[in-house]
Image (cartoon, rainbow, N blue to C red):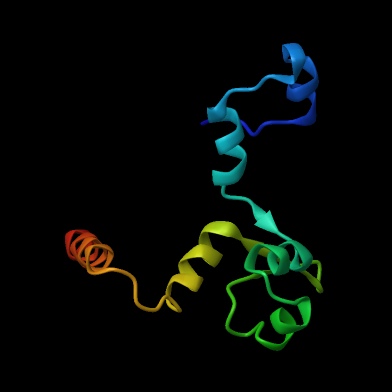
Length: 100
């Protein structure tokens, strides 16, 4: 399992050089978002998140702290996808059929 890129990694690399793979791993990691981070990720307001919280997959920690797992949010948002080219639809349908 690849580890996430840290600030220390940037400091320890000569001239601040890091590999593309290290940078991409930061974007692809399955992390948890706070409500504010999720709002930024989805380009919506935190108020919208609060009003639709029953629909959004989330975890409630210590009573009131909400966390949202990136992979679950990506899967949830896929249901709102409209259009797309036919090749995308064919690939999606084929993959679903192969999953069983």
